Length: 291
Image (cartoon, one colour):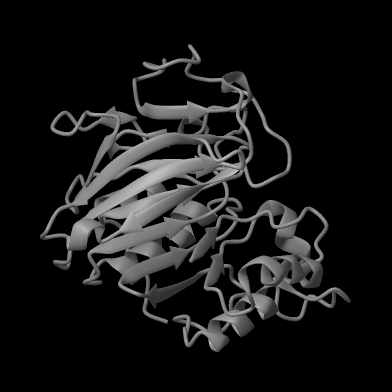
């Protein structure tokens, strides 16, 4: 399946975008997405765009593959689905306070009592310290911390490059887990604090930007040593995508990730292990009223 962290086509032409996807992957290939800032005008179900609305295409695709989102109205930019053993939670663009006040509560509500071993939080924008370009704080820290403490992988984009953290026990303070420091081995667990990792995968095909933060450009990088891999224009980046394979060798607690560019080069490879007790319900942080 594909998880797309927003900014689909920079033209707000949903019909043409999904036509391109269908021509390559087929109309029934599982494709889930978060809204990006370049998608906002044509996101809502009744956006009145003659080229269609992104939510309409996403919902129609989910219906074709038998997936029902937790709420049929995606206009608020928040929804979650369960698919083939994965729990996926999508939240949108952060306005003033939206990330901490609304999205974090929604994530908490969807994941705190969820018993899936593997969970993924997906959104578009970043906090400045969670990217190596020139983006500012836009999401708030609570969304990151809530996902981490509930044992979820954190998938983001927005900055036009690829970079991945080591295992973090604090995203806000960029604290690397002392018990799992290997840059190519990621450990995930619920807790207070929990532990997980963050990636920015923004090399989908519209410009490649350079590393501005956490120099030098080679490992080990600067800042607080939180980055396991940085792949930007400074490192000669090409367009590509991050792949994650779950249930490695039949082990439901193991996964392997790799970033492959369009030239077929694998520029990042890492293993992920989730704590076997990660399916236990855990309560942390703000809680929203059930929908």
